[in-house]
Picture 1 (cartoon, one colour):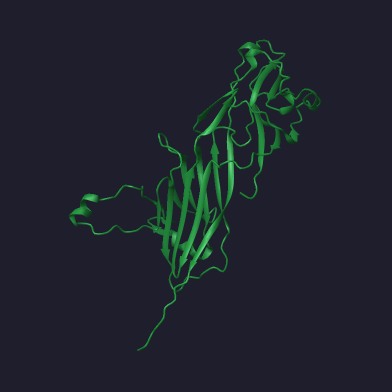
Picture 2 (picture 1 turned 45 degrees about the vertical axis):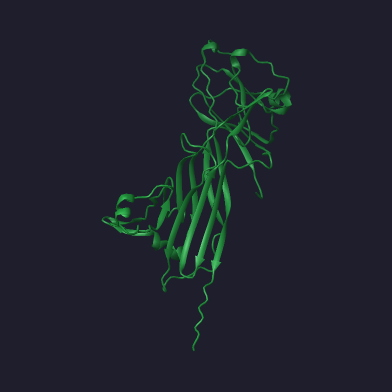
Amino acid sequence: LSDQKARVRLFCLAFVSGSPILEIGLNDRRRQGKEIVRRKDILPMYTERWIRFENLEFHNTVEKEIFEKEQIIRLSPPDGCFFEVMRFRVRPPKNREKPLTVKCVMKIAGSKVEIRIEAMAAAQTEKTKGDFSSKRQVPCEDIQIRFPVPEAWIYLFREERRWGVGSVHAKVRRPGKVKNLKDRLMGTVHNVENSLIEAGIGEAKYEHVFRALVWRIPRLPEKFHAAYREHLLRCRFELSSFDLMPETFAPTCDVEFTMPLAMISNTVVRSVSVEQHDDSDRVEKFVRYVAKCTYKVCISFILLKILLYLINF
């Protein structure tokens, strides 16, 4: 891991009557031990950690003087508008295991090319609350792995269809399962034809928008499955004598996914209070945490040169 950055963005959507005042309390380290809130305004939290904010930016409705003095976000939200209240940066902890590990390898042996992508979700994450510690499984969702494809090889991932040309989809090949096992044992089927793209989970195809081979996985680890389980995508093809070999290849592969908690920054909304409202006790409050992660994974290139020697006797 060469570099990492984390940015937190706080959005708000309010349906209110009148002009109430909204006060939001975060887990700012400067506010530790100085909280004075009502019991009904305290929200459930998944961690008791306190963090430090850097490079703060606010919406024009936020009273900056009160935040600098009391570390409370105080504003009058517009009715029915989804807007960004603030954004800031945090320093993510170092030497922490990544929630999703991806390895990309391109192997070139003469005219044969093989692309291999391995994805594995990490183990459970710790949940700390006071002096007690427990573990919960936080999955990675909407995973998207984009492996760049040279322009000269794009036609290999396209196929003719009835109404035009489309992309070749991956065949699902789960490890440990043999297709047509009975027929193969009886001798009816001797071998299984290899597909251009084979994926152990999810869907994969070439998408011209990204100029890349895109592997989409709904969730890792899968439901009722354990972590540290490798999932493989393999793409194998052979170049003809007319195909060009690119002089350079893209050095990185793009990875994007989301998590249902703010696991990177550990930001928590500790309290939400509504002031100057006729019936503040019946106000419904809801907080949704989402972590969007983006990786740049280096591609390992393996070049095998085949030398043929002709010996005359």
